[in-house]
Length: 431
Image (cartoon, rainbow, N blue to C red; front, side):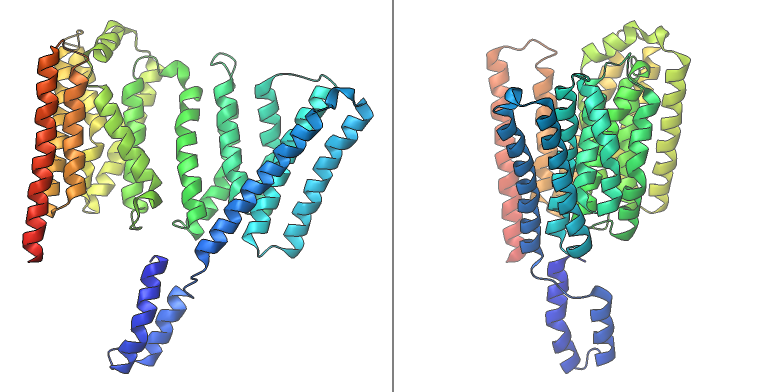
């Protein structure tokens, strides 16, 4: 239950006890269960954010100040400066760990400052002794040396910076030179910390923030690790990955009321819809059809395993009576059928028609659901999906400016009319 709901509950409990609705013992149990309603959380969060930003700015500022006359300094002086910065950051982190452990602002700021200092020291020493100018090697060294901070300090920022760092490292490497196994080793370093956060406080702001970065980083690193296996079935593979994230979100992490606290569901849903729209283009299906018979066995096995995973998760969602939500993650099945159609028609026309029909069906379903539930937001999302689908077809088919103008006018009129009707209905219900 969120903080505002707990505060409201605590305001009502004394009145319920006074009226005899619940006994005093039940009121005490309620207070023990939800704990104190801390009304100063917002202030603490702002203080922590400013502390993190301040630590980053201090670290960067020190680097810029030193860079002003860096070339004029001797090697020994440079070494003392680099090591001095690192030792200072360690002292601050040690002070926070021993005497300010209960202060989130101190712990976050100190760990951030130390992580920046580690990177700066590696860079300064490497530049002084001309060790290496390889950016990817620098990022790898920095992240490996920083991972103990994630567990030692037990705060959020080092984990976020680590995920950003390994993602940057993966993107900086060429596909032919990157070590596929090393990507998963680096990813594995953060998993125990993340898993523990999910078990203890799955909907706390730090955990939710880590979940957003973790999920996005996973998709990017997956693409780099399996880049050679994503030549032909990449759309189907990513459709399965996004659908899996969506199912994980609705099965295990769908309790919060705020949308931003559901990263798996949000990223999975956005990815499924995005892939669906991309597959409505005929050129994509045509390019896949041209190399359809070049699909290798490893790529096929990876795709098959991911589809099995999605099928299992989908079955679990149906068993939990979430059948209405499953529709938005059926893109792997529809796209898979589209790939089967390529076997009979390499031009991709039939597959293109199938995916356009699927997206149109999804859009109409969202619109109808919005009308039934009286949800203006859902109605507008459905109409926006229809509008995007129509606009995207302008890139496939040559229309005159007059025809395009008429379509836009019609779409705009439909938006206004639908919203006006929904507002009228809501006013009638209120009356």
